[in-house]
Image (cartoon, rainbow, N blue to C red; front, side):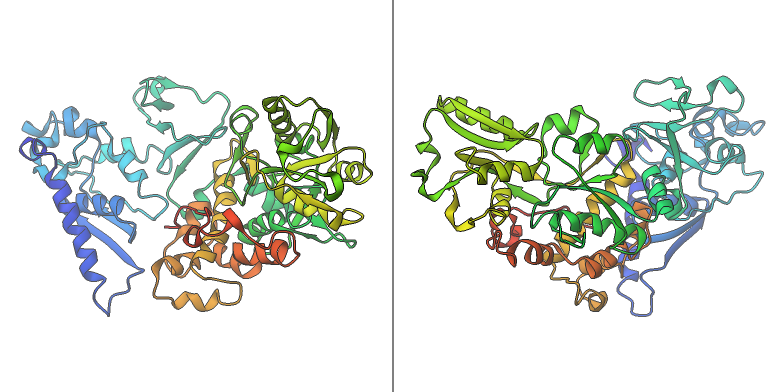
Length: 517
């Protein structure tokens, strides 16, 4: 074993590589079902079954026979009254049984990497090389093989469940960063093992399914982003994010309850559980992400703050602003702070005119109570159409800030966070691959594996979110890709026909998401 390790690898890794290459070969055979690879083996073959199941997600089910016991048995406990194996069964093995174990992982931790794919452990009751008590110690111990502990408040994967039945005092959550056993005092930890979608625990997801709708916080009326018509029907790119989540989770994009919120009340509504998603042209900043218990899950619109003025004002640039200029904006926003920083940096004394509700700001500017109206440029373009005479006003060319806008969720529910994040990502990646609401079903037969994963025809990505495998297909069919949403809500309405930075990265923009694989 040391001969191999001294060269930076183990023979176990070589055998695992051989298994991977075997799968590669099987995929070249026409008569092989490439979606139903399983593995089993005995003794050394049992160990190989572990390694390949952990390393290659093409394995859909694993049934190792022997091949595993506890690290304690391997190193010092051994098999009682068995001669040379009584004090560590490692002496009964070839070096191909062991990985390079820098972090002293036990086999239960290795097995957790197989989840959520099915894993069946088989072992005899009198195996001197793989003692059965090691299986009990690491995996069973009177419970299902629940191995990973996730902090229910922040979603961090920081604990492993590591019971010692011989000493009840040593049962609990083992902190591998600072070795000690601690009690789960507040019952905030989910123990996660194999079992597919059902092993993913999310209080928000459970409550959403019980309620039958997604609770979504939106603006009080911003055309193109979140705006209701006279009949109460909500439309906009922010609205579509929540509809995408509803399609993924509930199977129906229409199952959303929209709550209009002012800038001042939006975060309180989220942290108090009044809503579960805030999709309201909200800027991602460090203080919001880190200080008030929120998590931004992505960007659905890249923007920047600007100014709108009357065409007859004589102002054609921010450099034309003079001392005493009055500026309307929303109270308690990053816009208000940016405005202050801008005028102070220019040494221009100004008069802020602030209101809580967006419509109040627009009305004040339209009535002549201020010289300029400042907010995100997309907001200026959208609100301009609400003015009495839109053609009498213009947005100045300068952009004074970065405003990445996107959906927000509460901290503490990592599964729900992932669902919202990947619902948005699905819409963006669908546009990148040319998958639309009209052709989504036909893309199941695409030659591109990435496209097939996107529409649920390949892989099992839904299980990672606690959802079925057609969650992303429903998003695309019912809501459309990002380009469809932008065109429908922003371009076709004349708000911002030019997508600018919100164009795909492949077309000169900066819209870019991680791959779904």
